[in-house]
Image (cartoon, rainbow, N blue to C red; front, side, top):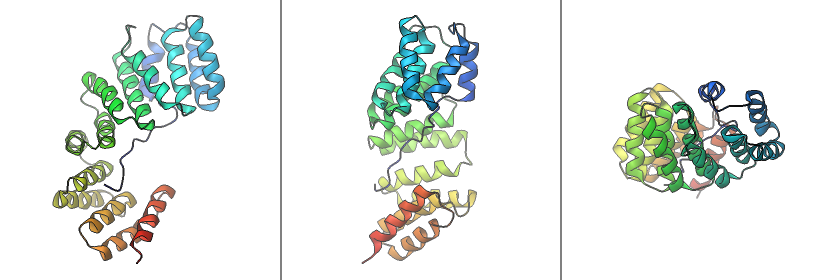
Length: 250
């Protein structure tokens, strides 16, 4: 499979819901310090990490550990962040269940950024054990399974995500990519066509369409798809489309 499926993770790594859960949790002894540290973990992660480590020594507990982990993510020390987030999520502290789910999900994404697909699967299994009703968790799990090339599992996870959120073109494109890896070309084409019905002209769907056409030997069709993908594409997708176009040149 020439197009990898990776997780996209925001630098903040904390959803509004997770922030609300943390903000009201009884384990936060110094809420203002915690929120300041979280903000600094993105704006100045080195300083935030030093602050968090000192706070941990002073008994800051889960909030301090969490701030340290997010600072590590922003410092691109992904393996350390993943291990730390897993440790918090599986620890004995009394945590709001939504916060615990968010921690496991954050850990999974950190492991993905570290290129550790198997560890990401373990973390995301923890999240899905607590909540099987979130399409984004299934999507993250699909990306983790893709990293270790468990394509059948990728399809199953995306089936679950699409059952919860059937009108998401991005999920159809991801499933088409996995089905292409499995050489399920008819099913992959159906996913791409449905994605383009939901989101006409979508550049990611067009790139995936081009890759599918190339794989089945339709080089002219692949070229047209890659050229169409350049219109309105993000910089990353445009670069990918150009790379594939160049590869088609004799």
